[in-house]
Image (cartoon, rainbow, N blue to C red; front, side, top):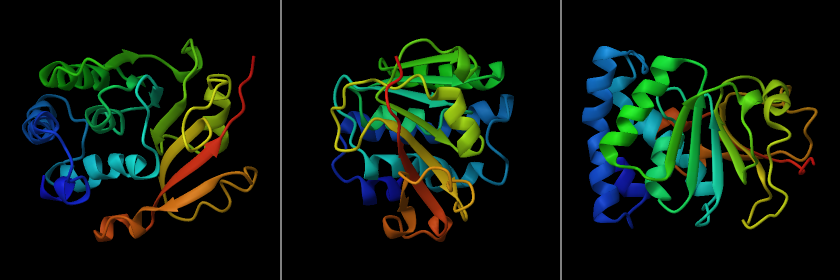
Length: 209
């Protein structure tokens, strides 16, 4: 929890309480349904929560904004972002029902009113969003093909509407067909060695009627 406060010192008492509860909630759920690897569960705050919040260092979501989290798994990056931005609406989807069961359990325990969780494929989602976030569920070309028609027309953020993607490693080949993508190195923001090759990729996408 200390590393969250180190990089996000202005949290409200409620947000601090919610972030603190994540430790018990995920350890408890992981005993029943394994959504976080055994070797990573003890590094929950660094490898999952702080990693998710890397997006918040790049983009401050506005009140009323809508964000789709595709392939959320156990709720990352959606749940940490929803705690940080309580006036932004988050829609968390995954194709695996047991993962959404965990997400819903955590959301209910934290009483997050700005989160909807559902077992669904990205291609079947109706509606449009300011941003679509994810944590390395697939390569960028496939990901874009899933969600390219789900971007809102009106921009109201400092970055243009589109994808905010958490990825690691060398992305040159994967992004060669996306010259307008911008990479933000999380190693320049967070000092833990885990973030050495981690990035946030912003890919603006145009509205498609």
